[in-house]
Image 1 (tube, rainbow, N blue to C red):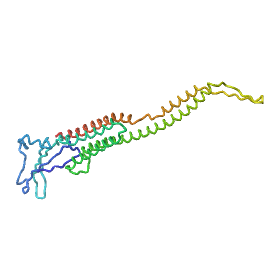
Image 2 (image 1 turned 120 degrees about the vertical axis):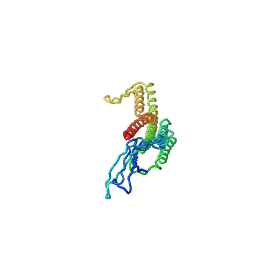
Image 3 (image 1 turned 45 degrees about the horizontal axis):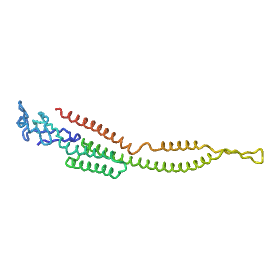
Image 4 (image 1 turned 90 degrees about the horizontal axis):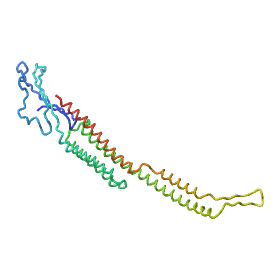
Length: 289
């Protein structure tokens, strides 16, 4: 059995090397000379043996060394096997479920903003399912202190689901702000209606009377009273209503959901392109003998 020093930074697209050493225990090179045969030094009779349940044998390289010990010079033969992990199992058991969890979290963008409990349940359930799936995958792996490719993927998907929950909070905030503005607008409209009724009363009085002048006993003092036209009042009311409509909130929950339904898939697609091109490229480069 040869040792394999695992480097899981590219897991599950990693490439591993295992060394197998042949060396005499009691006899040095003066007594025993160990060499590789000139024809087919390392042979694998069964081609099926190159493909294991989890790994595929890519190549093998044989070398010879002369090691100097205190008792003399020893011959050592070494063969290095290079294996590539078959990650089809992890595509089905890890990557595909995470895709579904992320896609399910996006359904909330098409649910009415008033259905907050349903949207929260959908997002939290997706996050919990993804966390549970991640725990099932990594529980059988060696506990290493560095980040693996699968960790990057899982944390990226968790980030997208978490951001969908943040988007839900933003939608709730703007909906609450819009409801407050609507209440304020209704109050102002009621005040305008009340003021308009008074102006209509004054307009009726104006239609029934003519401008007149009042003179006092003093010839130097006179008062002239003339009522205003009601058309100015109507124009002023229309301007006030238009101003209230312009003061309404331009950003609504539906608008944020519409933007998120396009932005989240675009960002997730970009994340996928960078992730797969980067790690598959590294895996292919390390697979070269």
